[in-house]
Length: 44
Image: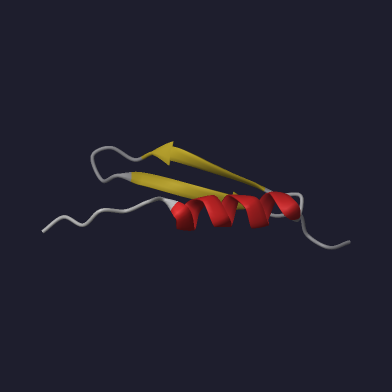
C-alpha cells in the first residue's frame, strides 16, 4: 500500500548540506524514479 510522506527528510538533508557549503540536486531516472545527488566540498 501507499503511505503518506511529508518530504521532511529531504528538506533536512538539503539544509544541512547547504550549511556546509554543498548542494543537493535531483535527476530524472525514468522509468525507475529519481537520483538524488549530494555534493560536499572536500577539506584541503
